[in-house]
Image 1 (cartoon, rainbow, N blue to C red):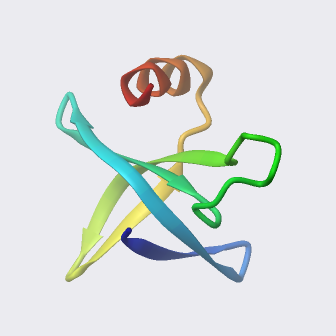
Image 2 (cartoon, rainbow, N blue to C red; image 1 turned 135 degrees about the vertical axis):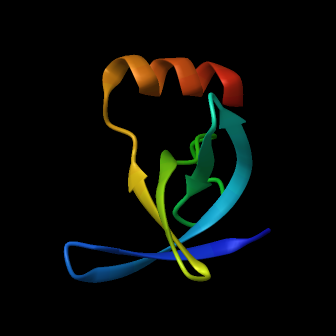
Length: 77
């Protein structure tokens, strides 16, 4: 699985990309922090949206708007 590195609040984090999709011309990623089950049957997941290309790098932000998060979550089910 592909891994991406993000910087959030000055801290670098690595996420595993589980799936990707494009909706209405916007690219979205479904990611987890480690890609593995935490033992309880659930994997913590995050949805990120591409907001800008800087050369070879793509800038992503966490989707936090409730309507958008709900809509994109259904696509990744």
